[in-house]
Amino acid sequence: MILIDERARTLALGVEDLIDAGAAGAAFAAVDPPRARLEARAREAWADGARADVRLSTELHWRGLRVALDGRADVVRASPRGARVEVVRFAPDDDEATSRARAVERAGFASLLLALGGERVAGASVITLSLVGAAPTRIRVAFAHERWATRLDERLEYVARGAQIIAARALERRAFAPAQDAGVPDDSLEAAERFLERLAREVA
Image (cartoon, rainbow, N blue to C red; front, side):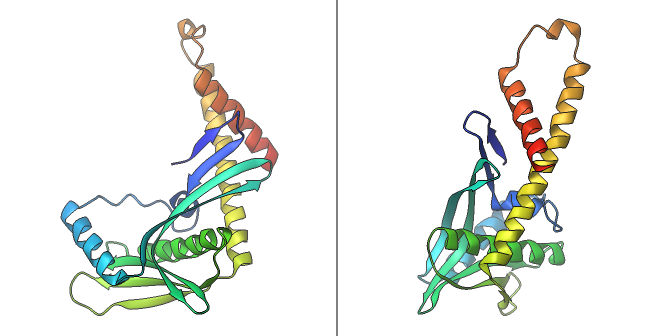
């Protein structure tokens, strides 16, 4: 979820929001509780003592805003050259190509978050675990700090430009609001609109 705070000039979002802003699009998969429990057990077994379900977060300054970004790495393994990040996905999947593409981006952005947090990243991978008995497979994700930092900048700009559309629609709704509502202020809505409008101007 993308959160904004006009007074603090803060934009808070997660890695999934960045992925949703890219070519892989948004994912709206229904949650299947039995499968989710099975996947959680399989993910824990795959970690095999390594750091698992690692929560990652960082703050950075971007075009006058303080951006709070959070994400998660399924597994982080130690190696002599540094941390090795693994994102785990499961097969079969209704949309294998999209699932794979999103997992690759999760691995890349998780690695960037880890690096921004001060850890040396030695590599990143997407691990596909089968729920029907096939052997695990690994896709290595090329991690170069500059490449993923550039992608982060592009996605943040996309999110900011999307704010321009949100602000325009909000203003349209206010223009066509019933007259009797005009005297009832909505400070939170107005603050969000002002922030989004200014953010859109700054990246235009």
